[in-house]
Amino acid sequence: MIVADLEQIEGRTYPARRRTQNLAGGASPIQAKSFALGWVTLDPDGGQVPWHNQEQEEVYFVVEGEGEMCLGTERRTLRTGQAVFIPPGVFHQLTNIGPTPLKMLYCYGPAGDVAHWKQELAGTLPRAGEAAPPLPAGARPQWVDVSACPRSALPRGGADG
Image (cartoon, rainbow, N blue to C red):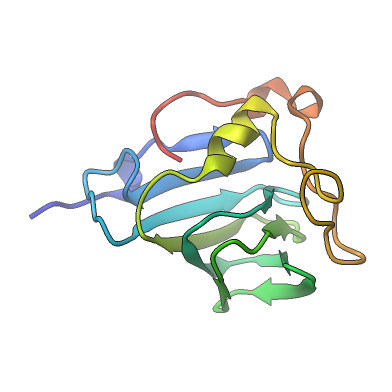
């Protein structure tokens, strides 16, 4: 039996103020081929999964908190207990708009790397409205600048996405 224990998965902290821990895929002991599954914690007041797209279809499920979800040209608030489907190739972004951490699960398939992890770490994410489609009207801005990030939020290492 292969077990992934969230308490034992270090994960990775990203510059856009989130921590991701792979439960299936990445550095997890569970290596499914059809999907990847992870736990994400977005810091209060602005922690973000920045504007990006990927080839896999994906679902975000908010376990705790409140966030602004941008998907293509749409924007709405997601709350505890809500899930959103993200079609392949569609740009999306989730921003914590609450005063407490937003905790969520993601699941995408098929499993494999997604470019935005490495792009965020390198500060090379395509910018909304320039190298990527614009964010929906009224959306919180996309995080793109590593130099504007506090040193404490820079990656700690590890192989998690």
